[in-house]
Image 1 (tube, helix red, strand yellow):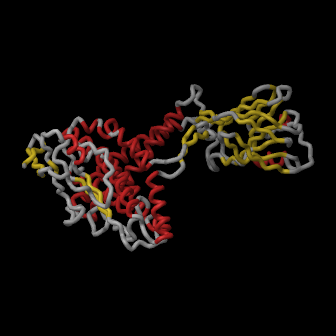
Image 2 (cartoon, rainbow, N blue to C red):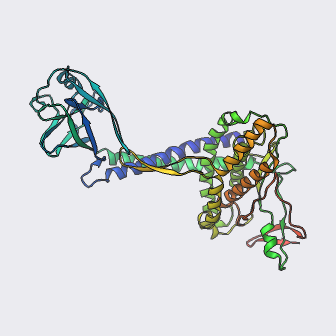
Length: 495
């Protein structure tokens, strides 16, 4: 397959797969919304609203537009509002009417418009409209499309219709000082059909997109040739461990088959690091899509390993290429800032001071593929989270619909080390070499864990911070061996 064709297939596959996943997610949410409430309504939280004026109005409600038939054979949408006065001795009024009629009714009347509501912490924003006229009792007006009035909680339901509408909340006697609790709900007969359409459309997009993505990745993987001889060259010999009392110690010190390199540029600019993140934006955009493709190809490769014990070579090369590309950008922009040379746009090895490679395994365990990427990797994932995760606390918030989410802020330990290094570079013109070695060690640990959790190797990553620009040399006194594949049995050491 030609490289251009592979790129086109990969791009189309990524786009279709993203559309498919988005449609499936939207369909799942819509289906959940359609069955969320026993009465069919999706209900918001209760808000307490209070104004000193005669009336509180909503912003203009542009419903479903003009040209829609007034009667349809299904429920296009129904709005339900529940309002209750804060003062039990008062009667409340709530109504929905055309915007023009409401403006005419409240012309010259002191009233308020609701602009925004936040639920946690609760905050309502209003806009007061001055006036001196005294409005007539709202229940006596005939222009309301739907209304409810009386003591205690009042409920209003209204079928969506074309036009511009306004919701009005008042005291039943039109007096000043409106204070009430309000809850909104909505339902539609279109939700479940729309959910079904999204689910079916998403599935079709994935059925077409995933094969295109995989074939495109395989095509690019075949064009990701072996590296030139140098620090990134493959074939680092695997060390044979003699059955001695030092075997465990030697095993802990053995080189890992995922190798990360980065050579510090001795002529770094003092201030270029301030804009490198901006210069690297084109790479960030490309990498977003490449990492999505990486996730898909890893899942496909996982099934291949489960049934055949092999990681498809072309997909393996593609995934290693994505990690290599990511490392070059990280080394340039944010994870080391160790060079001013702009990263190349390629998955293959290049003449660049940062490189990454993983030895291709001829055989992989079929059973480990089920547990190594999450269960066995937990100790390393915790360490990686401490090294590269958010260093500050998180807080929970609640949206208008009552959904709770978390927001994390701060800078990682790795980010702090890089920041210290580049600030020192700014003032001294020197990148502190011991700090660079430590930064490289942390990145090396992270990328080894990435290779393991991405199913590329069965060897467990070492709990070791190998500092410096290159991989550590083999322990002294270990004879080397090469892995020679034996069909059906994996590899056999050859002295």
